[in-house]
Image 1: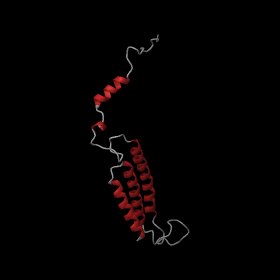
Image 2 (image 1 turned 90 degrees about the vertical axis):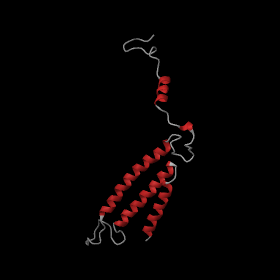
Image 3 (image 1 turned 60 degrees about the vertical axis):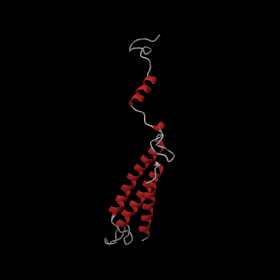
Length: 140
């Protein structure tokens, strides 16, 4: 019963955090959700009436099924990598892409640049072709 309550509380916290507009809170909600799912997988494996999966016991009826434990181990690795990706996305996010709680999407100043803006920016940074020597030509 305690395990079911723990899964329920983790799921409720995860859903609450994932409904927030802040990307960091969504990432933490994903962590809570992955913990809840891992506990649910372990509970489905019947951990309350079984021993360890490997050991010196001779009765195979009391040995735990190692498959749910392997699933949880795999899920931990996958959720860790996705969590790192989400946290990097939360930290590197640009103003205006709604990854922070203080972002206001109604302002026009946070609009993403279009292709014309990128071409103008490149022209400002590009060197003048007259100042660039050709291959094999010596600079003065």
